[in-house]
Image 1 (cartoon, rainbow over the protein chains, first blue to last red):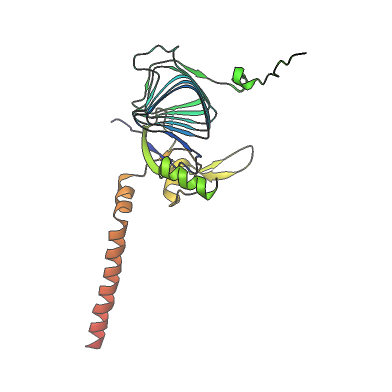
Image 2 (cartoon, each protein chain N blue to C red):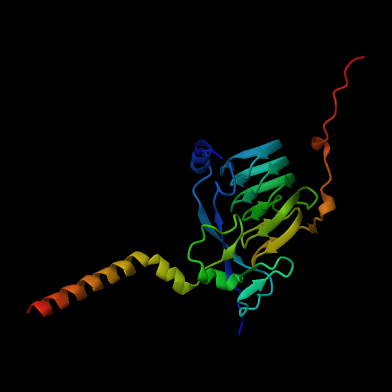
Length: 149
Length: 105
C-alpha cells in the first residue's frame, strides 16, 4: 500500500506578501529591470532582473536571464527557456524556493533552501546558497563620478 | 502600505487566493507528535498536523508559508457550512414549534 503524504496549499495574499508588481499574461519585458516589492509574473520577463521581495512565477509565466530575488520564490511556471541551456538562465534566491507540481526549471537555481513538490520538473542544476554567498554585483557598488581636476 | 497602495495592489495584482502546491517530496513527519518544544528557547507549539485541526482561522498564519491542505471531510463541511447551519436552525425552530403545539394542546 502506497503511503501518500498530504498536499500543501499556499495562500497568496498580495497585500500581506507585499507583492505590488505584476507582469500580466501576454506581456513581455526584457532588459535591466528592478522591482521594488514582490513580483507576480504571468507573462515573460527576461534580462537582468532584480526583485526586492518575493517572486511568484505563475502557471504560464516565464522568467529568463540573470535574476536575483531577495525573498522567497514560488515557481508554478517556467524558469529558463524550454529546452534551454542551464547557463542561459540563473536565479539567485536569498530565501526559500518552492517548486510546485507545475513548476519547470531549465536554468540554474540557487537558493538558501528548496522545497520540491511531486511533479516538479527540475532540469537544471541547483545550488545551495550560504550566508557568505551574497556577493555584491556591479549595481551594488556606488562609485564616485570622476570629476575634472 | 497605506490604503491607496492596498487598493491598487488588490486591483492590479489581485485578491488573495489559495493555490495547490502538491505533495511534498520529503519524508513525512511523525503523525503522532503533538507538541513541539524548541530546546533553545523553550517555546512550545502544536505540530503541523495538529495545528491544521486545532486552528480554525488561518488569518494569523505566517505570510507566504504553505500549509497542509484540509482533508476531504473538512473541505466538504466548509463548503456546505451555510446549509448545515441553516438545517440546524430549521431543526431548532421545528423542535420549538412542535413542543409548543404539543404543550398547547
